[in-house]
Image (cartoon, rainbow, N blue to C red; front, side, top):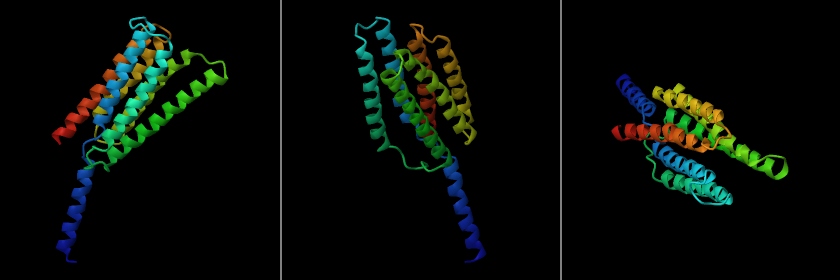
Length: 203
């Protein structure tokens, strides 16, 4: 191999690495789907507990089961259509990993709360802690992605998510708790996802 060929190979490898590093995030559609679904579910939860929608208490359980099923099916469909270009970039790997861990954490919290209600002295009020912890974990996810990539704008939704956690804890136990959570879900999930999708489209 001549020195010129070696230089060309190095430049080619560098170009691939740079392209992967600067590849747009591909999680926007997932975030948008979950954000719209979460905001709608939280708002519906508020409407039921405040009597805006005439429904019995068991309806809340069916509401969240529907949320989980629709979200899982939606993720599976979107996963089969996601662009493979740039999916293995560092930023996309970090984002995917941190959100998977986030989902597992929330799942464990839900199991713990449910177990406490069945086998312990827990009450339905414990479920209100899930959005609070969820916003905190969401802020962590955004922050890690921002810290390990060039998407520094994600520090803003990270800060908004931490603020949402504080706000929800402040109104914990109040009738408008889930309405506040729904508004913050729209701000911290839907809006950042739209920005991510716009950047992906431009790229």
